[in-house]
Image (cartoon, rainbow, N blue to C red; front, side, top):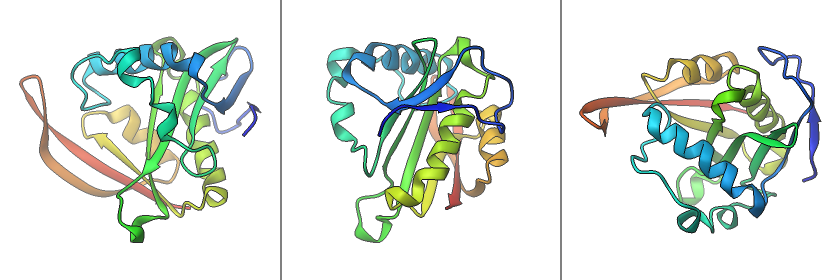
Length: 180
């Protein structure tokens, strides 16, 4: 898919500069990894506990196919502001139409509509990707993400209590989903 300029009226706050969403390319990996490692440090958005390296994630983009499970970046003023991936929810054929979404935004671009724009694009394009349901796995203490997903029509589909140990804290995992 080519880059798309986003002027999404559903975004919370205006983004200075134009935002585009496009397929991630290998040269985006350093920025993608910086964003992900910053999220790891917060203990809010991922169960990964140790920072990842470029070498460890060099094949990350190859695990995604633009026509089925894309890896997109949102770019503002030529900077990667955030990214989103879709991946198979579970490997069994009956779940073929369900995808798991992950979305991360660089700290300096948070609360400016980046995640919302990425998620709206996902919702809008899901049928063309042969996706009928989108699932997100969000820590229950990540109120901002839960609120955003709720605003976009995701519902709570499940709760896995105390399933994750982040440092000395047991954390619940909320499963959210939306049919498209």
